[in-house]
Image (cartoon, rainbow, N blue to C red; front, top):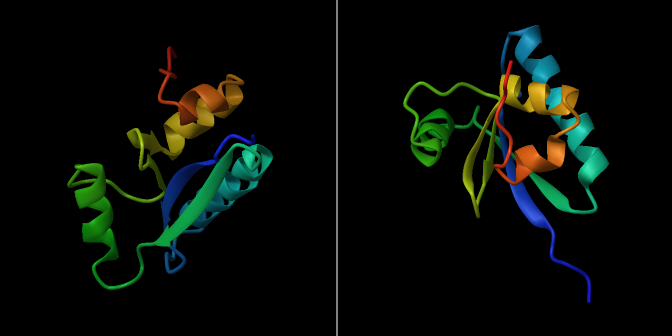
Length: 104
């Protein structure tokens, strides 16, 4: 029996004028494709009305900015910097299980 895939929500924006934000979102999409056998990436565009407020409420962080990752099962996973550190450390799966802390 196959194990059920874990959903990971990516709060992102397609309307940002910031090239840096767009590149970060694209990097997350690319990297997450490598774990598509164990995790489903669910994209939520916060550009829609109420999207930013919804993201911040979900994350319980009134200052959060995209991109942010969230697990329905585990809660907030973190933003781009923590994600990138986990990838660089070869600890992406630990990050997605909320078992990763950056020691840098």
